[in-house]
Length: 240
Image (cartoon, helix red, strand yellow):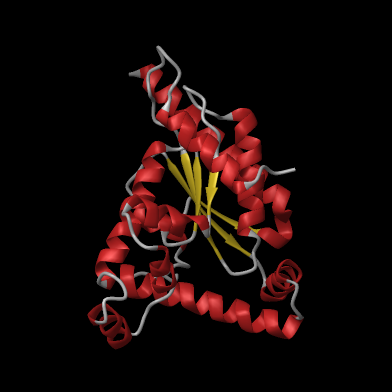
């Protein structure tokens, strides 16, 4: 069984705040997962976290934490923002006039400020390491961070609709509409704010098909790739 997200995050933050005495803080790895809607990113991320908690907790050790919807909460906490602002931070591009009107009404800070807050929090979490960041252009925001593994999770449309319907408890027709809408929202979000295509393979170290590999297979592939990268880095450092 997975731990409750709240307890995992408390343990994660506590380990960062109180490192073991006499231990030197070292760079911990991190993972970003970009996903097509319904491809099972949260399931895979939790499987990866469970695997890495056994194999790769770092020195000093720290539990792995998954950030998906709770990433918004972390952004708000980091920047002392009201909980009501969360509704104005969708993973989508907003119509500029609507965004400007909301700002003039005092509903939230300007859109570019919210995006900078989000980027700052994502980079901070990635720098601390032992995190798996789902969505919100994490791979693009942390592209220059060598210790971060970037993954793209994909699957055929029918598979994603079936998985989404089962996960959300809705029928196939509703799931199909939601999957299309979510994919379009993510595409426009990345295109509008980062001027690139979320589907470009060059953004990622791994592109994994969740249908052909299964969720557990995808998780094992991510864990193995991360371990291989860490082993290579240790070998390179030893050779210097």
